[in-house]
Image 1 (cartoon, rainbow, N blue to C red):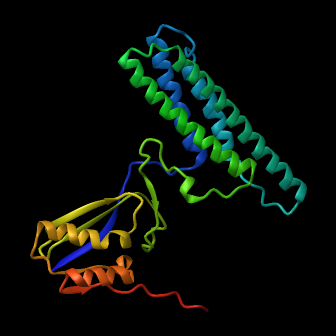
Image 2 (cartoon, rainbow, N blue to C red):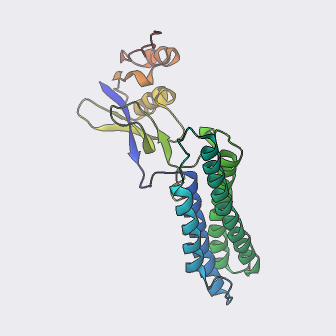
Image 3 (cartoon, rainbow, N blue to C red):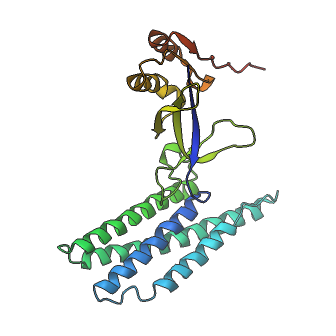
Length: 253
């Protein structure tokens, strides 16, 4: 008898916001551009440490600003303008550094393999910065609600997902789901890293993969997160014993 379950392997990331992810991207972009600049004998990033400090000051300003809770409409409007102006300044400085970083890439000797690798790394952080700038513009300047699919939760571990499994006291986790199928003795028969997948999408594949390794697997238990009518039908074809509780429907009040 097997047991199939999933859990979250947390990634080593800080709590993500679009403004702190933009800071991460620009900071790394400046650091790499400074290394490249030194390597090709230019001084265009000689003030790289100062550039990062300057950008961080604007980040802190944006970070501290909160929407007014006052009932006075004038005060609320004034605070809203401050927030918008601070975000604009933050974005404009980021865009200035991005243009400078792009110029750094253009100055490099493309035939040098080390330069090519560094240029690729620099371009990666430029792309991350541009993505976060777009999200900030949409959220703050255009008052748009950003769809979950457009969000990135770490520029250093971009595979990180925002996962809500409904565990008591744990509203969300940052990491990746991993599904395991183990036997009655706790030996893992099969595992699967679930990128952009949920439990109900992997139930049948987990059993089939485990059976390819252990032909004697004839029974398996799951929790309700793995349930779909289709999963129940397919699993009954390959298992003699199936424990797959049905998801309870929310009662209307």
